[in-house]
Image 1 (cartoon, rainbow, N blue to C red):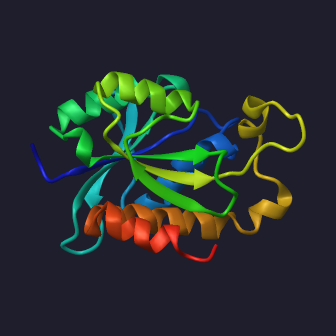
Image 2: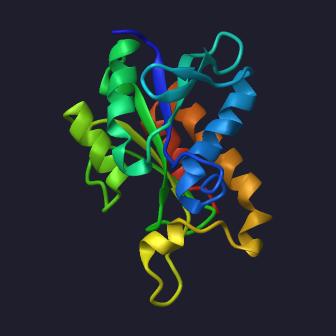
Amino acid sequence: MTDTWLIVGLGNPGTEYSNNRHNVGQMVLDELARRVGGSFKVHKARAHVLEGRLGIGGPRVVLAKPMSYMNVSGGPVSALSKFYDIDPEHVVAVHDEIDIPFNTVKLKIGGGEGGHNGLRDISKALATKDYLRVRVGVGRPPGRMDTADFVLKDFATTEKKDLPFLLDDAADAVETVVREGLAAAQQKYHTAVQ
């Protein structure tokens, strides 16, 4: 296996979804792509892919945005991990998390999917839950709003002013976990005042 990292931003394809809470993972990948330099290209694994390094001499990464809908992200993730010969321990899924307040980033490896169908499909396709997750908090739906309706809506006007900072923090968290490891990233992001 290689020392390359597969960083996957979860979301749904199409412009109608591009600013939804559910697509925050892909928004983070856009920020990482800006840092790496270059543009995404279509890969045969049904994903937009950008290969590069995180900083000069930094770790080699494959940034990927599956072209499938969120709930069937596993196929492209599995195909890319096989194509690039990347172990699940070097796969990082960046995704929306309703159980974390907006403007908060948390990290973990393995564990449950918390009802997140995209993660469930990745776990099934990789035949393990032991891959890293960068969980980007989007908050809970207000009142009795259906969770699916909430995550498929754009961020609220009040959230949009802080969204660039959240995306930057999440991209920093990805860089930290890849460069320094999960424990260092958790120490930094789980104890930070949000």
